[in-house]
Length: 423
Image 1 (tube, rainbow, N blue to C red):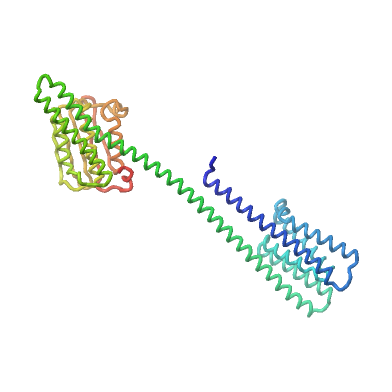
Image 2: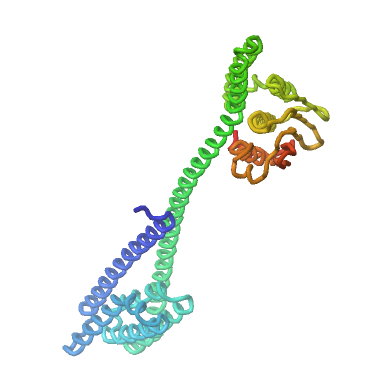
């Protein structure tokens, strides 16, 4: 089962942080053992005076306790209250270091450097200054008790202070480098997660585009071929009815059906050309509307086209929408209206273009339109979607025995990005 991108990212990030922390913790333990071993070896080798058995045992016990506390530092801080446990930890370790320094006559000073590094890792700036200030005081007191010579004490303290400062700066640089590396790794993980999200969104966009393309093609088939096939069907039925009564009119209807069939083929070419952005098959809207109305006249309907205002060049999307609206309206009149007259009005207003189709047929109810029982059905729903994508509106006025009026209004300017999915 695949995890969500964010969950996967968080798991990877936690694994990365845990792995990095484990590596640094292991390195710190190794340094602890090395420093303790070096401090104890230098203590027993360098000191000129021999140790008593009591001193040897005490130094070894204190060294083991110091090492044990250093090894369990993170466990102690996690298990108990952080501030209290840190205060207790450094207090105990400082006391142990003070005793070992005194017993070793200052030769075990390497232990102090481990505490200095720990103070940088675990404490804030004030805590670092306090712990290392105490270390310097302990170091100064120890050497004063051992030598009782201020000059030697001051020289040794200055050198030891430089060593502490070096450890503080080195540890701080190492921590900053670790922090920067973790930030870079985290940013890389975030980038991977963002790329994964982008891939997911791209797939969704492609699916959505395919969905809109299917709807658009469905509208094209219904509004284009559906109109022609309906009209061809009317002419064939008329020819069949007149075949034995008026052969000449029957042949005329068949000829018209054949011409419409050719127009349907041309319509398919226009649709393909529109998909390719080819404008060679475009005609003025007025001419296209007159051709459609002429077809209605052949079927016996009184039809008329009225153009109001000054015709102007419209965008291909707007012209195609108005053309489909006229096709849908006239097809519905032929199939459902039982009308004797239909009028088509194209009006060029200041900022928009409107198309009105009105018949004197039997009309309908809005309940029938919504359920698709009467004229409208899928065609009006698809047409409304097409018009809305262009920022326009589609309105219907009808009632039983009062005819049917379809009005479409589309602004001349629309958001191109909204219509891209409809092309």
